[in-house]
Length: 422
Image 1 (tube, rainbow, N blue to C red):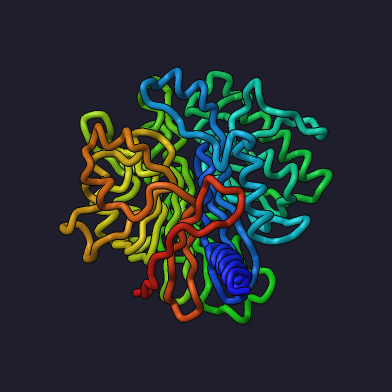
Image 2 (image 1 turned 30 degrees about the vertical axis):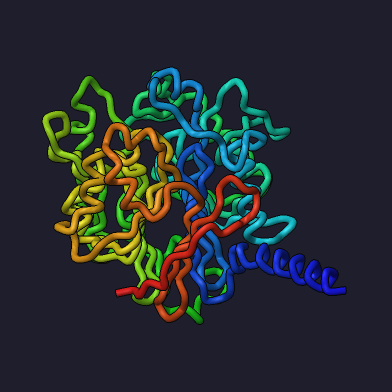
């Protein structure tokens, strides 16, 4: 009898223990920011306080080409395992999170046209019955309806060059992948009523609460920057950060990173910044205009948390930017063996930058990276792998959950906080 009781108690504890490690469900009034680790680039999914949701990017690059081109650097596995593509991994995550048979995405923002932000068409990519290839964004949108799609240059796609006729892949914009995006957008607009919009710089009306906005007057998403234009902080006025001539000065070549959109999410005292692959480096190879972060910093202002520009690559997250934004929590949507750049790692850990010690969370950190930059950075990181979830409560306090990216459900590995928004 005693053995039976002990066995029952053991089973009950195991069941309760398993239940406790699942991410607690979103509740009305919460702001959730999920940085989803697929191993193939950036993807953030936001559930806003009234239940409206938004996704920023859905990357899926060609890992085999990357490994061949940049060896001995290499891309990580696809998470949670090799039976997934990046697109299906995102679908699985969103479905688990929303708990619906047919989830929908209210807003999708594509920050810029690089494959690790929206996908790469390759031989292995499947084909939708709707005619377009399946990769990243298009694979996601083929399964999960997207109501409103926004990017930096719809519908003209002519800044800084005509991207529709860009057969050379200038800017790192893959011709086949970009044409596939256009085919996807055309189909979804015609057959499923998807709204297509250009990122409206300075606006706080493009991404709004759809279900119960009156209950959350302290919530706002403000568009800060896109292409070469930065919001001035007044009305809808913008100022140019660089000219097309400056951008194309080197034999007509450019990098689409500098075209990235940037926005700030505000919920009461909590502020969060996300800016794609905007850069901040000035050195012997990069002109003054390449530093987009320094003029952008005072427009953004102090934040509670941020997604690091360019995955924590060395050409971004300069000292000016960190000093002004002064975040407590930083998230690197990282995947490469050069993430973070050594200089970025030093700034993030330095007590001489900003006013407070930063808690650093990375979606993926290669242990091999430590061979190049040393073990000091690894020792200062709160998380080196996982889905990084920031949950903000109505009182301004927030917590960070690290979910196990190697599992197909929302299993919590660690929880940090509570933090207090300043």
